[in-house]
View 1 (cartoon, helix red, strand yellow):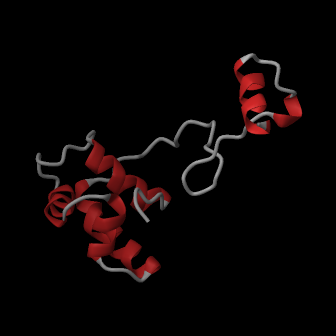
View 2: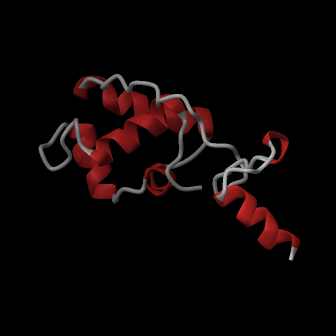
Length: 108
């Protein structure tokens, strides 16, 4: 019954400020109110070195990068070589760049 009355208070905007709900992501963290940091596109000639540095720093393999960025291995290779299958402004390229530059994983 208490939950129902709290829900009624929320919908009626009579909920006290100290009881305001805090929305959390599925991992229990509060979502950031700040916009995402802008991603600087990596030059095609620097991409293989960036992948190697990330693998050494995180002691991982390319299959882990594919998993974390939610891309297929062929998409990662197409991004690395600058092929048009994975355009620089696309979502796949953005997930790869976000992972390699900011260490933001799309999947854990």
